[in-house]
Length: 390
Image 1 (cartoon, rainbow, N blue to C red):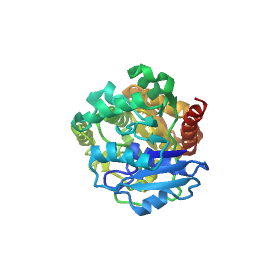
Image 2 (tube, rainbow, N blue to C red):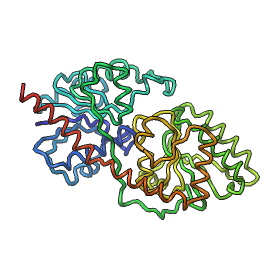
Image 3 (cartoon, rainbow, N blue to C red):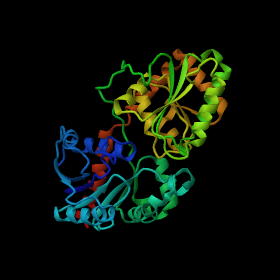
């Protein structure tokens, strides 16, 4: 088969590594091209993706890959929804796969797409103004869901919610989990003025926005310090990641908690770190004493899997997808007191969480990008086999 892949989400707008769907697209396609298949993959890539990164993407490729760069300046609707599908057709594509949940409107052939989340339909209040996303959420995504031959949900939780919103797609929805891959070139011993490891680190890593429920974690951390004031100068809560929208409450709470403890810790017991590089991310995850992920809801919850993959104990909310992915390897909590108690167990009784660390490592090994790629290829091939029998 000649399989077209919409790789427009291979990087962020500036050509960087990106997170979320950009991370999924990169890791998935890296694993996909390393599969030994008879298929030809026609991958469109954004112009801001450098030639060096394209070469990195194709390292170890065992299938034939054709890279297609845009021939025109990027004009979102025309280049993506009209010219891209036309170009795929001219290249003889038999099927289109979209990693982003959006199939170009001008594509009318066989298609498969990945659905990462449907929270924007269930809880629009968790998201910034939908003005820029209105066309996608009202037109492109629903149309893609209805027209796709197969839908790949990244968790059973996402699959069930997808079917609740679009009951007609139940028979064509399959669960294909994301994976985790720990790079071998990051340093556990990195020294940085940004985050000196001079004390125990309680870590949150992700975009700071209402959906992440950070006020809950901040209140729990403050409760932990009130119960164990001797830890004020030995423990630091680091919030790593860019500030999204609706951060006013989080900023105010951080200032309030830091003010309470300012006599003992004038530099603050909670610190915003800002955006981090990919290497810094893995260093932080590996060196943290405990990773917190208090989200109201997630479609998959990759950060907890990444923390588990480097042996860091995880405390997370009881959001359904986080319970599904973390299993018994994650300490799941649903109230401030339980959250504070779990922190105390991880920070004050490190020997007691040795088994949790090992459970996390074992659990993370079950989720690989190679498995994601193989399952996706199998589903795509089933469509071709079905066509042959018709």
